[in-house]
Length: 626
Image (cartoon, rainbow, N blue to C red; front, side, top):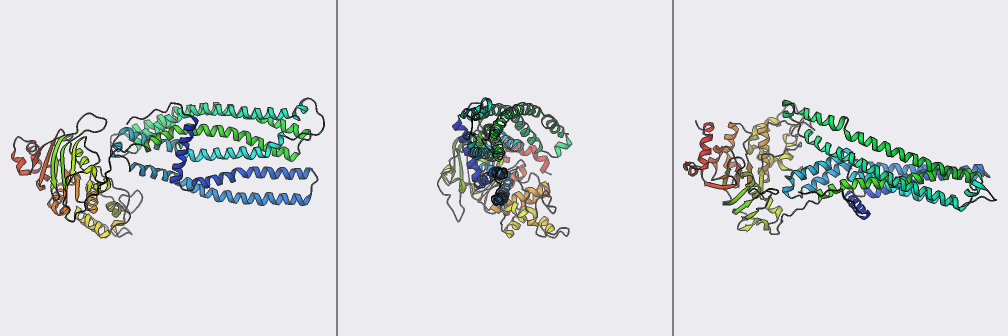
């Protein structure tokens, strides 16, 4: 996977398109969020302007004729209006907080749903995995990505409303003049030219704020980029914390990472310098323009162009106008900075799935009579020129028990991945009942297989849900599968455990991370649970990768003694390094350096003294021959 660099410049239209897509995604994962966000922002922004306006009216009334009935009416409007606005804000804020709480989980669920649609090769691509780690680290470290859109669009909309409210309440300041003739400074203040000068100063302040914010954004992004990368590295260590970390003192590597990037990292110092430098410039610039505007309004008030109450109003609204103008500049700069992280996210979401899904329905046969054929199949993994399989041809039918053996790197797991259509052959075809499997609907073809790989995953959920892979399941069927997998005695002891309240073992969690009554299973027992999961799916093909690797010799012997009962009339294909297990199979396929070099029964292959199987058998004979 080749990722684009994102140092090139984007047009304003491209910037908004990136932001717009993020807003659409947020609306998809958090329906109606933008409606509540907009209503909340309007109410929140309007509130201080309402207070300013009503306060100005009351002060003007007190300084003027002071009509007590009108004053009382203004006071009532101020109190009741402020109360109603506060109630609306609180109601909308509570809803907004719910969305904020859901954001992280919804974001993760969205990424996981999208990841489930990926072509399988992306899940094994280290570049893709690192990109996922970058997205995760950026989101957690700085809120980069969709979270920033939530926050910055709120700020941007709030500042735009601030401009509108401020301008509507302040426009009269620039049109009103005092009666009489004035010379010098007061004459200038009372002329239309002064309004033009003040407006120009406010615009210059906004433009300077945009420039300062842009420079600050570049500096902050450089610092944040280092933070994201360090968090991705840090997470890679933390997620692998286990016994090896303790026994081999590997935790020192993690601690070195923490000290380097988190306790006093270089990026923090850079961020501090950038923030202090440009925040100081912004403060000085805003203070200067605020002073000019303050003196302008004071002079207007002094010569009688406006009243004391209006002075309070204009002072507040112009200050907010200046802050809003600077806020818009800063907000858009932050969104531009965030767009670089959005590009990472969108590239991840847009990873192509070129695997042809097919349209042909898989035939539903009562006799489940299926035949699989590999016809001159060769395969090499993406990003490599080495062949993992070369010219493999073989057939097996329903009910066959096929063992795949060979040394590490011989192509065994690749054969299984092609069989299950996690990858398509580079050359040749795989046929189901004489038809190329790429022509079948992908989901229906996948449903034919129950697979247990060595790196199976058990979740910290109830035992029954782990077997059924669903929160609704047939309890009797789950128990039958666990018993067939060799966990009958364990299940009975768990059901009769006097030290727990929950007497149904299927409802108790695996592990105790989230449930104090959770069950701690041994490695062999967990492998049997994974096997029970494959049985529960009840698919025509059962594929097992080292199904007894974690079992002790006695438990392994028990599994193989009941192997025919275990898989019933299904086709079973399993990878094994223990050749003693192959005696239970109808056929054995021997792989070496990506090629199928032998196939036959145990007796036929062992009789070929010069063959690979015979050599492997005798090399292991000391472990299983008396």
